[in-house]
Amino acid sequence: MSKETVSRGNVLHRSVLSVFFTPTSVGAGSVSSEAFTVYGVNVGDSVRVSYPSAQTAGIVITAAWVSAANTIMVEFSNTTASPATPASGNYFVSVDQLDGPALSSLV
Image (cartoon, rainbow, N blue to C red):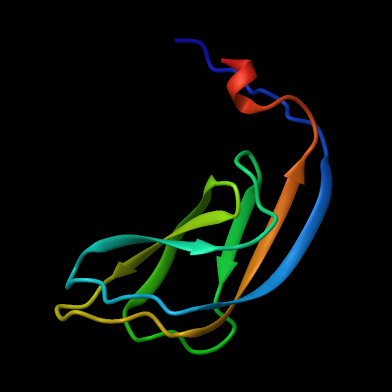
């Protein structure tokens, strides 16, 4: 299998939003993905999520992606031996709208 980098072009627009999330509990030593509404995001946008304050002990944000228009998925990992709930509050969501063809047209 050949290795190839596909260029999507430049970032057309970058937004940094403050969005209130109320995540649910994550089982001991497990990973959980949860959907949140973020108006204006579209499939193909690049997103990053961070919590600007102290997060619940043992909770780590491990991934984030746009799953549908106006919806992102955030993956939380619990590194402890007990169930834990990620902090509720305003999370920062950085959204990059990319230039170039949609990824689906490149495969």
